[in-house]
Image 1 (cartoon, rainbow, N blue to C red):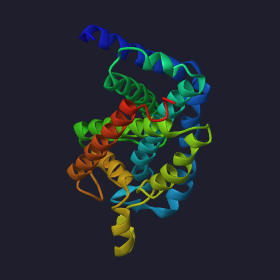
Image 2 (image 1 turned 90 degrees about the vertical axis):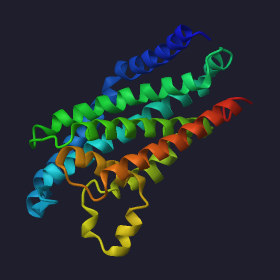
Image 3 (image 1 turned 180 degrees about the horizontal axis):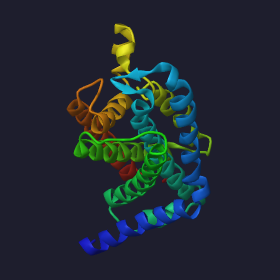
Image 4 (image 1 turned 120 degrees about the vertical axis):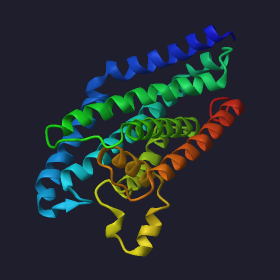
Length: 257
């Protein structure tokens, strides 16, 4: 394929993905905003006033970066896994399989589509948070880089999950039993400095800890881990998942029978 043809294929996938989630915005964009508003009210205002400061900031300000990142993670993942599996279920994926579009273009198109939804919801949650607290940006490049890379990482994860899934129940297993626990234990609501030494070590195994803390450093300037280590970990996981996804596409895992 020529570069122009590849760009046309890429842009077509991205536009279709964006139109897909914006067309049903009451189901895709509104619920995360409502959910995060409840988090701000319950954890920030009601419980946060009793907790006081954490990491040198009031509790509301401390949890805002984690809640924004949590919304980005879940939305980026959900968009790709639901969209790609729906194409498998409807057998419209065959149109892509018989086309001359390179696998990396297909993968990139779906990932960017997932990032569009994840980052869009992240922006919505950020605007909602301004009604509860004031945000000051400590390191803008770190903040932007962390949120973009994290969104890409979980869009890749959603793509792999969709390829392996054989029924609709399969696309909810990972978010329910893996993604949600790791997110809640990833330092969204607390600093791991509060944990005993053993559990601090256990927390360091959680990849979401690095993403939340990298983003928190970009906004507040505080982090439980070195922000450059956080970026390195995210890039490592992106590389691993991208290679796995491309290998699966090449072999037709879950899409060729």
